[in-house]
Length: 481
Image (cartoon, rainbow, N blue to C red; front, side, top):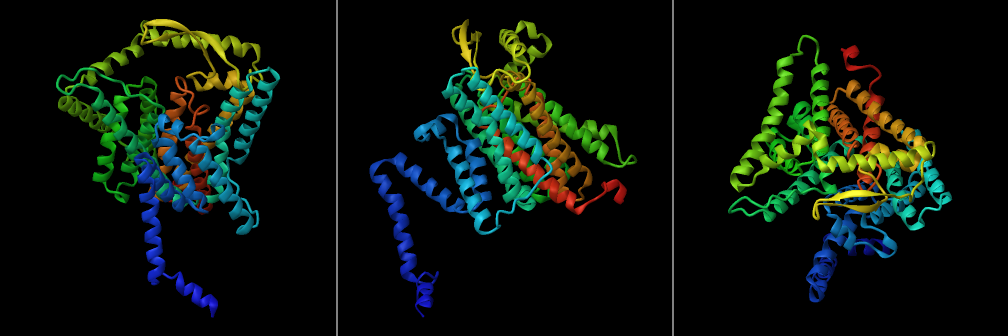
C-alpha cells in the first residue's frame, strides 16, 4: 500500500510533483543569473546535457562528438578542469563509467567483438610502447603525458562497438556529423563576415581552425546521401545544408583539404560508376555528376563574393598557385625544411621512434613578422612523419593496419548491402578516409589533437555497420541478383 502511494505521488498526474519540478527548474536557471550571465548560460546547457546523457553510453557519445567538434579551442580551454582535464575527456570518462555500470548490472560483462578489434589493440600497444620509449629517452614527462593521450583516444572505438547499434549509427550519429559541420560552417561564415569590411570587401581573413576538418567530412556524407538515399531527408534539405558547409569549406582556403576532398570526390564518383551494371554505366553521366558538384560549390562562393564584395576568388587562385610552383611558396619551403629535420631524427631511431614527448627545434616562417624564427615543436603537420618520429616503423605499421582494416570493412559493407542508407554511409566513410589519408601529408590530426576522438568514433561506427551488414548478407549484391 505504501509502495502504491509512493508511486502515485511521483506520477505525472500529481500536481505537487509537477510544481516541485517547475520550481526546481526556475531556481536552477534564476539563481545563477543573480551572480553572472555567463554562469546562467553555462548551468542550463550543462544540466540539459547531463539529463540527456545520464546512464546512457550512446547518448554520452553523441554529446561528446558534438561538443568536441563545434566548441572552439578557446572555449574548451576555459572549461578545463583541475589537473588539465578537458571537457571532452570528462565526457569520455562519463561514458566509461556508464559503460561499466551497464556491463556489470545488465550484460554480465558480456562484450561484443568487431572486425577491427585486433588492429585497434595493436595501435594501443604501439602507443604505450612509444610512451615507454619516451620515458627511457628522458623526454619531458609533462609533455609525454600530454601527447600520449591523443592516440589513446582511439580506445573510444570499443565503447562505440559495444554500445551503439547499426540503426543509431546510420540515423543519429550520421546526422550529428552533418549537424556539427553545419554549426562549424556558420561559425566560419560569421567570423569571416565580421572580419571583412563589407563596404569595400577588404581585409580578407582566412578562417582556419582544427574544427574545419569536419567540413569536408560532412560534405562527403551529404554528397553520398544525395547519390544513394536522397529521399530519407529530401533533396532540398540536403542541398540547403550542403551550400553553407561548402562555402565555409572554400573559405578555409586549405590546400591540403582541397586535395583530399578532390581525391575523395573522385573516389565517390568512381564507386558510383562501377557500382552500376555494365549496361547502365555512362562516362558522361559520371563527368556530369562531378561537374554539377563543383558548379554548386563554385556558384555558392561567387554569389557570396558578389554579396559581400570580398575577394574570395583572388585568394583561392593565390593559394592554388602553390600546386603549380611549390618552390615559390615560402610556407611550403619552410614545411619541407621541418620534414628534413624530422627525417634526421627518424633515421636515428627508425624502429621504435624517439618516443612520446620528443621535440624538434628548427626555423619556421612567421607570416606576421615576415621572418624565420627558431621554434621547438612537439608535433608535425604530417601524419606519417609524426608516426615515424614518435612511434617508429612499429607505430606506422600499426596505424596502417588499422586504417586499411577500417577501409576494408567500409568497402565490404558497400559491396554487400542492399540498403540505400547503409550504402550511402559506407561510400561516404570510404570517401572520408581517402580524404583524411591525402590530407595526412600536410596534417597530423589523425594522430594528434582532440579530433582523434572523432576518428575513433567514426571507426567504431564503420565497424558496427559492417558487422550488421555482414550478418544479413553472405554474398555480394551482384551474385545475389
